[in-house]
Length: 41
Image 1 (spheres, rainbow, N blue to C red):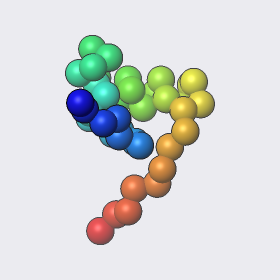
Image 2 (cartoon, rainbow, N blue to C red):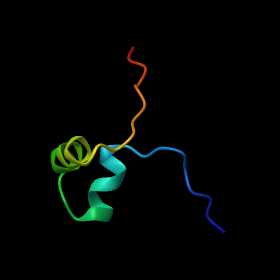
Image 3 (cartoon, rainbow, N blue to C red):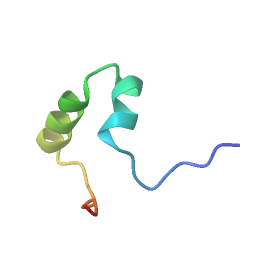
């Protein structure tokens, strides 16, 4: 059984939704998806 993750990246969602990473980000902003800040180096 595969356990669902708490969060997904745009890179992970793009192939599932058959859209580009940029389109995932635009859609997330438009639809008000919850997000987590990524820790940058």
